[in-house]
Length: 296
Ligand code: GUN
Image (cartoon, rainbow, N blue to C red):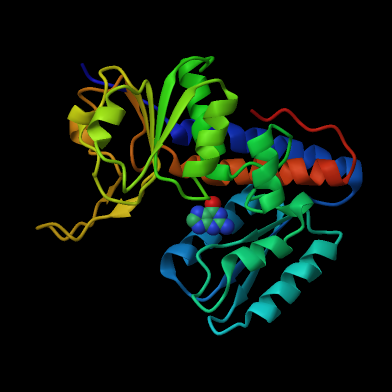
């Protein structure tokens, strides 16, 4: 068997188009563009690339994206002061503080300062709590993108066995909450899980977000499983000097066993930014007391 590919790039392009149409309508209705502030501290190359991609996507969709780039030695107090300023800026609908922050800054303390109503990353404890209790709020972009791909592929997920590998606040934990809300039977596996292969072999749905290249081989999967690979890992250069991007799943062996699988690149990656645009539109409409556009 050879799995069908889940084309996140195409799905994300549709979402971005609908976000762009909704952003144009918002500007006509309110006389101002939807605003997203992106804050980057330091010059980590991967974060820099993410922030530039987010700013470009905003521009293409007709949102007003403002980048705030702060030097690596910025104090926690100065960073919090900027976030507080953005909280009260009427032109800013969404605030995103790019993670990771430098080690001298307490990430949780900074995320706690972001207004929950502008928290388009869904990282504030209020939004994490809303997700955990079934209230509406902002949902972290990557897991929400994964859920959209799963529902598009499988339809209703009720009753399916889902295994989430990884327990980060950004992906693993919110992913598990989302699948639980869809009535899946959810297992969260992680680095201390004893027999991961045995856990995975029961799973109809597998979502992997551990940041370890090609760590999950195909023979750990249940035949026909739907596999969502969140990992984006750059390998050391090969003999021809190419340093390929690979996921957390060993694609070559998994594709022979799974029913459907996201490729890397072109799977989950493009969904994160597309969902960020959707979350920012949600924030803008809520702040302007307008009905939410249907983007999904
Ligand atoms: N770092 C890695 N992923 C993310 C994300 O989705 N949002 C933010 N703010 N930082 C990240």
